[in-house]
Image 1: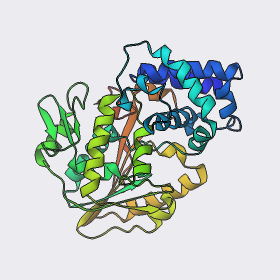
Image 2 (image 1 turned 120 degrees about the vertical axis):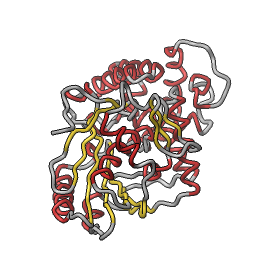
Image 3 (image 1 turned 30 degrees about the vertical axis):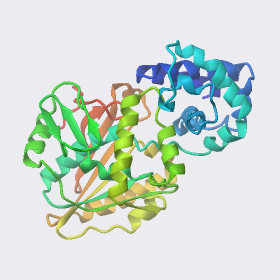
Image 4 (image 1 turned 90 degrees about the vertical axis):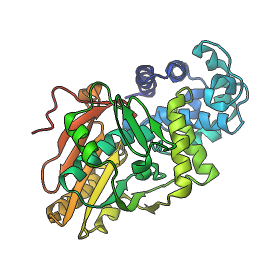
Length: 361
């Protein structure tokens, strides 16, 4: 897919996901690329990058980081995340200062093009926690929670988040992370039952891996995490702020390694349920490594037993037309096959039951 098509496709996705600012800017970038403007110049050398690598979002994060760092004063009033007085304006008016920022700071932006997006999207905790509760309901034991592609490890504190949907909710009522309207339509019966039976989950270990992890306590890395959140989506930013506060008091160890090598060092432990989860990271892993990751997950699944359980919880796109129906939440219990339990929008909220999925299978 050529660059113009990539940016146009991402523009449509941002429109659909509630970011008119990014939708407008990305369409203008597509036009600027076609005309050989400054956006084409800054993207030179990245023409062969696959759409799954999210090049448009890498570029947008670079400019957002520039705004948050005070390096694009003329663009800042168009970015609600900047904290400066906002103008009531058409998002299209942001294009001229955006283009100028690209023209003025090409090397800053190119540096961001080499970085895979690491949003640590807090909203994705909604489907992930649903999968975790399903696993604990089937194998009620203290949990070792391990995350592949953990980035800053924010979702490894998800047991301390609070989500609500109608009269059903889960998590500490005083949590700094509050996710409202977490489910579209009724909460599935299996999840409602699990919420009643497990008002809290005992985590005895939190850990994960990432080839290039971020430290949420570092000003540089917290800037990166904020930059990947779209600037006109305040609820997402508020959830991230709450998760960063939790990170200050709940330590998590993230190994600087890939998923294959990390899993090779994992063994099941008696008296615990080992849960490996991941969300929207599969697309950043090469095919050969993913085959090795799958083999390691199969090894752990085969070792699962009543006194040392294993589950794999995944929230991933299929990179097919089926993604229009939401990304799938799948759960694998022990050596069983993965089951689609629910769907959710790409940022995790809202989650919903999809009529053609059958969690009872």
